[in-house]
Image 1: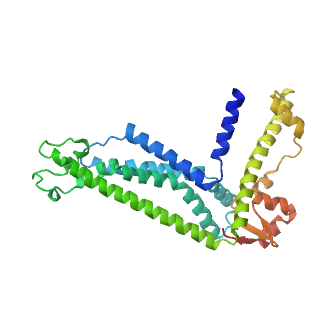
Image 2: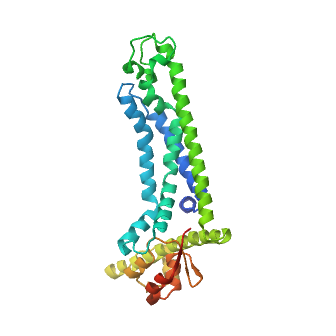
Image 3: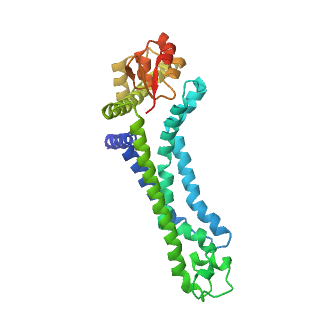
Length: 319
């Protein structure tokens, strides 16, 4: 049973680590839908008070969207590649086009959840109705009694209004939800057009053919999976040697013993300079016509003593 659960967790982890942008973005959108639904059911509660409705409604739409955006930026590895590039190389070898492409990739992935949240909030309409109810002009309502200001209008989302104006609740609710849903669909249309134009621009500006770009994507995905798997084993074996040197023995399970027997002792402790060479911003490059698909691919293809010289000779191409 434990082995079955472990395998299931590995499958889920691999699924969530998928490089398929459509699947990944779809998972983010579904998670956002679930979060938005749960929030509206369990947490949303309009204060129905003039001056507070507007702030509460905007916060209900904007604050979670901002939080999702910052989380998306934080969890994107390209963010930290850019930080590492600036820290290690002071961004000397990063062109404006490369920075723009990288930031576009980071922001493009990060805005999926915020846009989904905002669209759902506008299509549902509760937050918009809460925020804008106090700004409804009573004179725009037919036969609406005089003497009722923003304080009364702010109570409509909760139906906390005098009986003589309660009959206008449905009309006000329909009007505000119409505006909210219209904005929601306009945001959907704007997002769709933006994505379409950016994809067209990416394809038109890419120096790679469709097949080679697909190959590059497969290469990066495979390299990342193999690197993480190998780094896990390497770190475990090095840690085992450290523990053994301290205690005189190390307690390993069967799988770890098999790995140690298969790979032997760790003979290669990687220096920091080599880690720096494979860390940072990287777009498609060529060295004398030979594609270099990643920093690791470049490091393994070019002799270490020639890496600095090769950097100057590489042809940087924006993807």
